[in-house]
Structure formats: structure tokens, C-alpha cells
Length: 207
Image 1 (cartoon, one colour):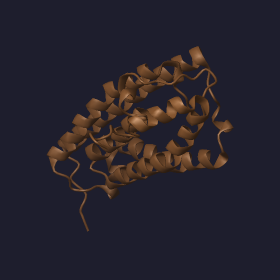
Image 2: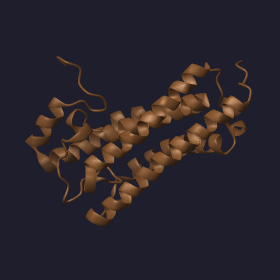
Image 3: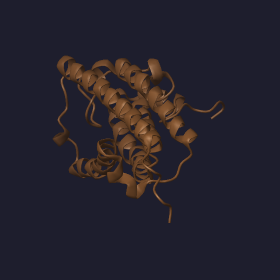
Image 4: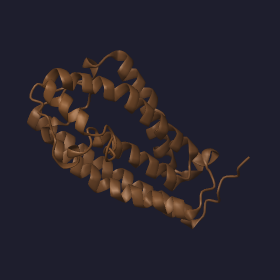
């Protein structure tokens, strides 16, 4: 059995790094989403299939809950601690710092297209600029990177596990549904775009 790492000054330093990354990223996301709702309206979540709404809650609640509990008091999540080297935790800090401008870049590129659901807005346009030039769903990539960074900062297997579960759910449940709607909206234009880009990471040369 692995003993939880000591809750010393360095651990609390990582806690404050996690707080800063989490709050700033959520603040950017909330601000951009509010602007998009004002300019282009929104699609209510209840318009999605109930199974998808329930699945999102099952994944999101423990993921966000674990992060919030760790930030509020690291001892509350000490039962899921792993003994990670400090350099790995600092790598998590570095990843988190990179996520902040990435989220701003993605949401700025999306503009009024930002949606709370997998459904497509009536005035939705096909975005192929910014990070969308190489990746079709960079916002999901940034979200997973955020929670991976927080899990590394916290040295917490529970947060890391649910980040991986979220990745699988996004890749194999959310993205196929979202892209089916985009094909209906944009037809062959989206099919060509899909063939030329990666889903969550850029395509490797020759792939």
C-alpha cells in the first residue's frame, strides 16, 4: 500500500498552482461562453438525449468534485494520493499554464459557435482557423489537458483516472454524436475537413 505523501509546504504550493490554473481557465471559459450566448443564443441542455445528459453528469461530477475537494483541502483527497516525483508535479504545473492561453485561443477562434451541447446552432459556421486548422475538437483536448495537469499537481490517482474516463467518453461517445450533427449541417465540406484533420491531436505526417 502506498502511503500518502506528506502535506508539507511544497504540496500546498502545488495546491495554490492548481487553484490558479483552475479558476483562471474556468473564468476564461465562462466569459467567452457568456459572450457567445449573448451574440448567438444557446441550445438548452435538455434538448440533448437524456442518456447523454446523464452520462455527462456521471463523468463530470466526480472529476470536478475531486478537483474542488483537493483545492479546498488536500487532506480530503489524501486517500487517493500517489508518491509522484516533484518534477512530474511541476510538469503538471507547466501543462496547466499552457492550457490557460490554449483555452482562450480555442474559444476566441470559435466565437459565437461556442455551445453547451453536442447539437449545432442554426447559425453555426464551420470553423477552420486557429487550432481548428489542425484539430477538430481542440476544446476537448484542452479540457482533458487541464484535468491531467490538475491530477499531476495534486499527485492524485482519482483525478487522473476520471480524466482518462472523460477522455474515453469524449472520444467514443461525444465526438461521434457531435460530428454526425456537423455532417448534417455542412455535408461534404465537413467530411473533407474531417479527413484532413485530427480529432483531438493533429494528424501525423503521412497518416
